[in-house]
Image 1 (cartoon, rainbow, N blue to C red):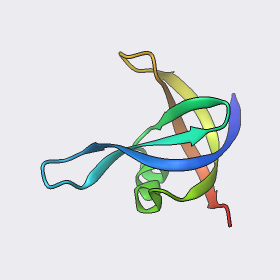
Image 2: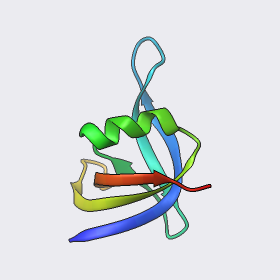
Image 3: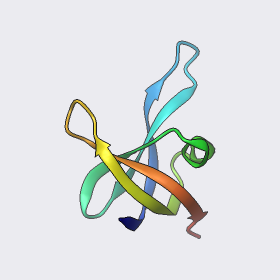
Image 4: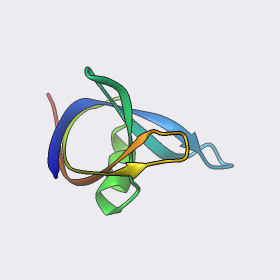
Length: 78
């Protein structure tokens, strides 16, 4: 099922060189949704701490029970 979320992108994982490799979108309705690192998800790594509108699908829960969102398209909120 396709969904649209608005919120702020925050880092949640880094590699050994301190590059951001994992992000979450923090929305008003929930603590956050992890962003799947597909092509569009990786593009969002450039927008840490920016407000965005994303569309896509909820894929699954990870081992901690957090929802993972697969981004199909996004836009910056100005």
